[in-house]
Amino acid sequence: MRIVLLGAPGAGKGTQCKRIVEKYALTHLSSGDILRQERAVNSELGKKAQEYMDSGSLVPDELIVEMMAGAIDKAPPTGFVLDGFPRTVNQAVELDKTLSAKGQKIDAVINLTIDDEIIAQRMTGRRSCPQCGAVYHIENLKPEIEGRCDKDGTALVQRPDDTLEVVANRLETYHKQTEPVVDYYRDNNTVYDIDANKDVTKIGDLIFEKLNVFTLA
Ligand code: AP5
Image 1 (cartoon, protein in one colour):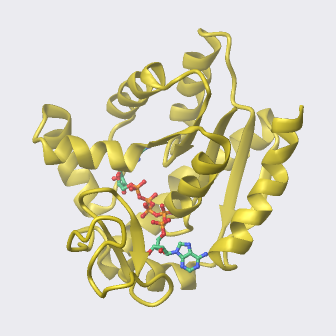
Image 2 (image 1 turned 90 degrees about the vertical axis):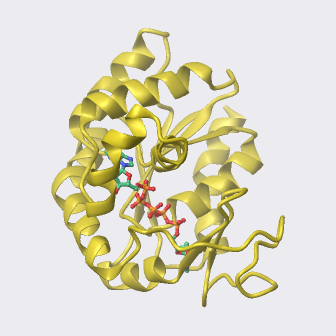
Image 3 (image 1 turned 180 degrees about the vertical axis):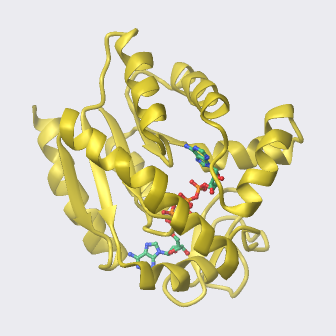
């Protein structure tokens, strides 16, 4: 099964991807996580991406398309969930070309819909584990010990692009450049809209309801 998970910054894409990959044994391919790993090792790609990410703009398509084609190539044949990619119509077109060259296609598109007002609270309260990538929230999803990851005890960190100012830019970028991707998929695939204003478990259950159809097929 090959899935695209769309949604605004803070809609809960990463949170829900972790649940989806566990349930269906898929690979989680997050463009944001891959870029952050590139930055952590100070690669050429990481250096090029830095200023775009820190300001809340999109990294140029040509860099992202090549990076994600490489990640898809390496993914096991059981399938994957794309998180944060594609983010422009051009990226979506290039993704279709990459898959079609392998005789593959996207099976399902999940679109997490959320009110803009909720996003700032989710983003500024997010904390993540730099070791294992687990994501928490200071109010909505607290770790057992404040400031420490439940899985490995590592000190949790706040992402540098989770400030109010950068979040506002990321949201504007999303409305201008990524919302048209939803329309692209509506024209070419089945898009499942999921209300992401609800709690994490309820959203997960709604997503599973849609995806179970593919596992029964
Ligand atoms: P990326 O890392 O992809 O960031 P994003 O899309 O802005 O999404 P986030 O990871 O911030 O949010 P999320 O939806 O995953 O929410 P989460 O589950 O963590 O991209 C970062 C940057 O990289 C971009 O700005 C860009 O520069 C660059 N980039 C990446 N991909 C690119 C591409 N394809 N093209 C060009 N540039 C690209 O949840 C957020 C918080 O809310 C957490 O604390 C969580 O615990 C909490 N939460 C989640 N769900 C709920 C809920 N239902 N109720 C209450 N709290 C919840």
